[in-house]
Amino acid sequence: MIVFRDPGEVPAGFGPSVVAIGKFDGVHSGHRAVIARARVDAADSGARVVAVTFDRNPLALLRPDICPASLVGVEQKLRLLADAGVDATLMLTFDRTLADLSAREFVEHVLVGALGVTIVLVGADFRFGRGGKGDPDLLRELGREFGFDVDVVEDVRAIDDGRRVSSTWIRDLLSEGDVAGAAKLLGRAHSVRGEVVHGLKRGRQLGFPTANLSADLEGFVPAEGVYAGWLVDEGARRHGDEPRSSVRYPAAISVGSNPTFDDVAARQVEAYVLDETDLDLYGHTVEVEFTSRIRGMEAFEGIEPLIAKMTEDVARVRSELA
View: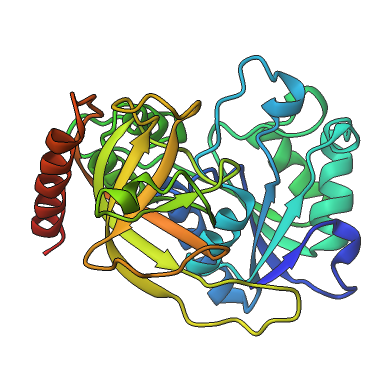
C-alpha cells in the first residue's frame, strides 16, 4: 500500500480513485464495510481504492476535553487499512490549517486536485470542512459540480440488538476487559504495539519472564487483568534494515500496576511467552493481541500464593489458546 502524508506528495495523474473518508479508528467491521464497497466500485472502473484519514482524532485539536483515547495508533491503522485491501492511504495531519479548510476547499484541493476522485464513500454521520458544516448532502452537491459520485454506506449493526458498530462501543467493551466481545466488532483480536523495554525483572525472578512494553505504546490498553493472547515479534528495526518475517508466540498477558508489590507507578502491559525462559526481545517491536480475559488483577499476600496463581493462569491460557 502506498502512503501519502500530504496531498502535495500525490503524483500528478494519480487518479482515477475511489475514496473512502473517515477516522477509521480501529478499522472495525463497519469501516471495512465501507472499504469493501469502495473495492467493488473501483473494480468496475479500474480505479485505485484510497483511504483518506487523519493522524489523530480531530477532537484532539478541536475539543481535547472530550477527545476519547484512540483504539489504534497511526502505524497500526496503516497496517489494518492495507490488510483491508486499500491501494493507498492519504494520512492527513489534522492541524489548524486543515481544520480551517472550507468544505469546498477540502473537496477541490484534496479529493479532486490530488486524488482525481470519481466516487466518494462516507458514513451517514460524516462531517467535513471548517466547523463540520459539510455533510453527505453538501458532498453530493459538490460532486455534481466537480464530476464525482457520492455513496453513503449504511451502518453495520449487531445481529442480536441492532446496535451500530462503533469505536465508542468497542472502547467501552475494552474498558470492561471484554476483549472477546470487542473482537467480534473489530473482526479481529484487539492489540497494542510497542517496543520491549527493561522492567523490574520480577517476572524472571518468579519463573515467568515477561516482555514489558514501553509506556508510549500504540493502541487502547484494556482493563487491568490477565489475558490469553499472542505476542507477535517484529524484530529490532534500524534505519536501512530489511524487513524480517514476524514470529508469533502464545502468551499470557498482564495489564496492571503490580498490586502485590505495589512498586509500579503506572499500569503496564507485559507478556509471558509460554514455555520460553531465555527469549531476548529487548529493543524489538512487538504486537500483543488479546484473545480472552482470564481474571481481573489481584493482590496476593506473599510470593508463594502469587506463583501458584500465575502457574494456574498459564495453564488456563494454554487451554484457551489450544
